[in-house]
Amino acid sequence: MPSASSILTVTLNPALDVTTTIPAVVPNKKLRCAVPRYDVGGGGVNVSRAIRELGGESRMFVALGGASGGHYRRLLAETGIDSEVWELAGETRFSLTVMEDQSGNQFRFVLPGPEQPPEGGPALLAALADAMQDGVRFVVASGRVLDGLPVDLYAQLAVAARRLGVKMILDTSGESLRAGIAGRPFLVKMDHFEAQELLGKAIDPDLAARTVIDDILGRDLAEAVIVTVGDNGAYIATSEKRVHIRPPHVEVVSAVGAGDSFTAALTLGLSKGWPLEVASRLGVAAAASSVTRNATELCQSAQTERFFDEIADRVVELA
Image 1 (cartoon, one colour):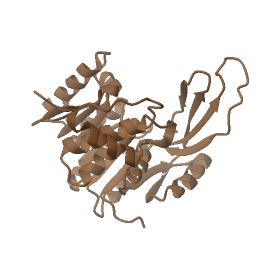
Image 2 (cartoon, one colour; image 1 turned 45 degrees about the vertical axis):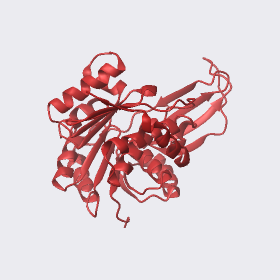
Image 3 (cartoon, helix red, strand yellow; image 1 turned 180 degrees about the vertical axis):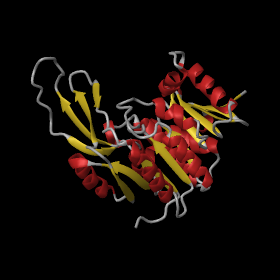
Image 4 (cartoon, helix red, strand yellow; image 1 turned 120 degrees about the horizontal axis):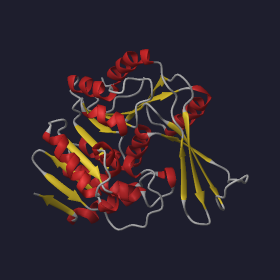
């Protein structure tokens, strides 16, 4: 049995991350890559990995299936993080990242997850409700809901969490985000691309952030909303206060794990009883640390702490 933890992360569509390099990407040729690196991936799993790096603990609920799921399980065990595995119908997906030496460009090929039988929804929700027992105070629903499962699964999870006294942090995109918000989670976190997708139009990132915040809080669909806007930091809002936190200036190597590192640090801070603004500042610091690192490496603890101190004067209260 996994040990009790105040944080539970949920990953319904994980990916076995494969990262490699190549001198140059050219069409119509056999491209011979370097020896690949394999990592466990998917939003909630990455959040748990980053929480561990930052000195905290969490428990993972992960849906896995097939031979690729077996490989994933072996790597998951190596993390040392408590996990509960839900048996997935079909094969756990792969995600391929290719770094081009010649240009420094990064090419990401993300495969879809396997479609699930619709009758599996109630049993999955019941398993998630069971997993939220034993001292869980925060549940992080990260990544999209698999095709075939109820599109409003995260909304149902938010309702179940509220009934159990657990605060749900929703960090997803597309229809999973749109439907999940209707369940009134405690906190909704997204980036500006997801905000624009939610609005159905491409507009200025900062305007998209403010517009989505106004909409969600105006309809009382969450207690807090966070929208990240790349190198311009993040907007954090509740019905009582809004702030803009700007990150330190860093050289970007890879943006792959920035969002998950943010969510990890945010949740860890909240689990310690920190105010939302302070926990979000740690999130911005963790995201800044993550982008200085390669592909799937996520944030680094000492660097995150340093950035956290540096950006203390980069928090601006908004009207």
